[in-house]
Length: 221
Ligand SMILES: [Zn+2]
Image 1 (cartoon, rainbow, N blue to C red):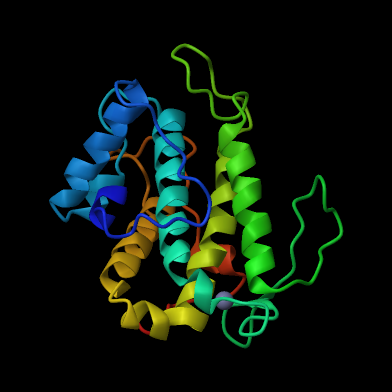
Image 2: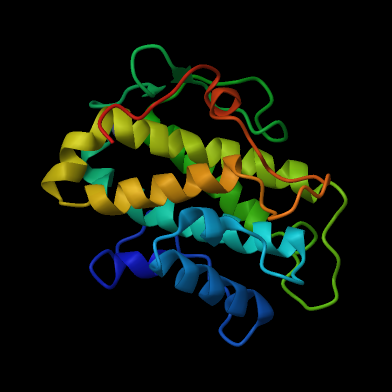
């Protein structure tokens, strides 16, 4: 859905993760964009007929990373050690960073530091060919779904922080339509079953309460 941002928001926080043009994953991305363009979010998150679920989740996860990268990239000047000395989403939620590998014990840090850790961590996962294979015929790992869920769960916190702490700046920049569309798409993707049928197989269906650790609605959506 990065197409929604056009050329105005070329500033990103981290380098954009490219899906090579001409690849199958690129075609999937174009398919998603075309469906999104029609405005039907429910349809847009559905696994296209005959496609591989893991690949569909991979392509969309990369795209959400790119979208958040752009959205946060537009407000980095407002998200500083002073304005956001802790990573929070409203007064009730404070996040401490741990990636479970390099940083096992959660550390309390500023929002810009936290988001830097978070986005770097996501970038490392997306660049790991054993987790996100880009070559045709290379299988996704068995734990792919849980890796993707962890990535999406963490990316959600950046939306939450932007909504709670920086929505005024987003409004000033007239980026709120992009933020709202991106967030709605994200929520549909993680909540709505990715199938048309009642196939009883793994799908994301993440609960926002689980994502957030409590009830959550963006304050001014
Ligand atoms: Zn901030």
